Every structure is written in C-alpha cells, then in structure tokens.
Image 1 (cartoon, one colour):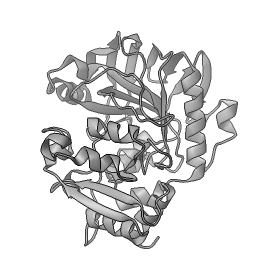
Image 2: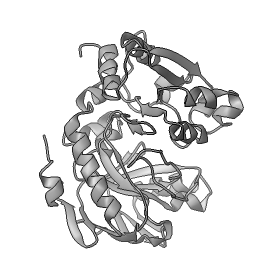
Image 3: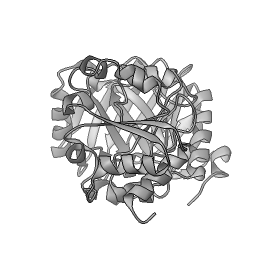
Length: 352
C-alpha cells in the first residue's frame, strides 16, 4: 500500500467493493480543510484519490459536490439542495462521506445501500486499517452490550456513572461496510449504545490527559454532575471553562444530554497521536477506554449493531469525551478494566 490511492482501494475491498459496483462520493469545497486531521493528501488530493481508488477496482464512481453547510449538516438538507439525490443514494452500492445524521442516509441504508466514512489523515487510515480481528472483538462487545440492562462506569479520578439501556440496540464500528444497511467509519474500532436518555446519573470526572475530541487535551480535572441524563454542572479550571463555553454556544438543553457510551477496541490506537494530529479516532478507538458522547444520537442503520435504535436526542450538536482508562460494568459484571478486556468472551479475542 505505497500510495494513498492504493490504501483506499484496499479499504474499499474490505467493504466488499468489486467491479461494476456503483459508488457515490459526497464532497464540498472545504473538505480538505475541515475534515479531521492536519496532513493534506498530495495532488491529486483527497477526494480525487477516493474516486481513483474506486475506479481502480472497476467500480462506477460519481462525485457530488455540495456547499460546506450542506455537507456538514448546518444548512438545508441534501434533498432540499439537490432534488433526487435520495434516489441516487438508494440505488448506490456504497456511499462515501455522507452526513451521519441525515435523513437521506438512513433512508438509503433501509433500502440496502452501504455507507462508509473515509476522511482521516493517510497515516491514521494506514495504522488503523480495518482488520478481521478488530471486527471480531467489536462485534463480540456489541453482543454483550446489547443483552445488558444496566451500565456502570468508574475511574480512578472519581467518575461514577450508572444508566439503564434495556431494549436499546448496541452499536459497533470496525471499519467495514460489509453488509446491506451498514454504515461504518474506516478507521474506527469501538462499541457503544445510547442509554435510555434520562437514566444516566452520577459524576463524570475528565482527568488530566483525557481528551475532548476536536476541543482539547484536558490539563486539569473537569467535574461534571449528571442528573437524569443531562450535565447540570461543570466545575474546574481552564479546561472546564472551555467545555462550558462549547456547550453554551448551542443555547439548547439537548446538547447537554447523553448521546452514547462505550469503549474502544483497537490496540493500535495511539493516545498521543490523537492530540498531536487531532485525529479523534486515536482517542475514540483507544483500547479499553471510556467514550461518552453528548448531544445528537438519532442515527440508526438497518443492519445489526449499526446505530442507536430508537434513541431520541435530536440536539443540534454532538461532542465526544474520551477517558483513557476506566472500569466498565454490564449488569454488575466487570467487562473492561485497566485498558484490557476482562470478560471471558472478550479476552479470548484480544489482539495486538
């Protein structure tokens, strides 16, 4: 995999792309500057490289460019801007880089289309390349999580949270859109679910060295009091002030509500790189971490372990908080601790 085009073609193969498949790529003028990461892809650039990779495999590839606001979900919807795009999406075999929470994407997944996000730096996609071992461990974690009714998480810094999830779907990401109705992120390895929104209670302590994706590496403890699913108090120093300001700018109580909770499943993720290059995936994937999302969670794919089922938080924002080391309990049983899988069904699938 000496070039980015070759790397992407190998990623697409993991999602089952073959000759004659129809691939639809969404882009925008600001894609290269606003995507996660900091390292530009050399000419012909990121989006053209995605197209060339698809064509290298013999796929029929179309690229649609929309304004930045439409692409990032802050303007009119895809269908409002580009009538009939929904039908194009439904007739595609694979959708690349479509807005996760868009109605059009969920309708396309229901129709049997597959979707994948490929937008990280080349180094991240190369290092966190989708492999079968990551899929097996992530899937097994989702199976355990889906059968559980209660979740409790604790950390050495003082986090102690408990919530209910009975009846909620478990979600996992392993980097392959390898079945109809599935969305995935090519660089992802993680397990999560949307708790019953008003059931989360307790204290969240974001300790020094923990990460708030695309916002900051925390330098001093942030104490968040959570009541009935919402952050009701944020205390601490400069990092706490930064987080408070981020939430406040949305002026919407739903932004403070829990979105999802879970853990990372990729031992190749590098915590330091997550800060240095702002990849986010290195924090979200980090092996045995605790990842908490706040804000919107109304995403659901048609495939098993894809999406959050009947999650109800339609906030205008979304933010992920990653705690490097935590204890994760399902129905009172410890399943993840000290960045290791301790449940027997997960231990046997650990990899390096």
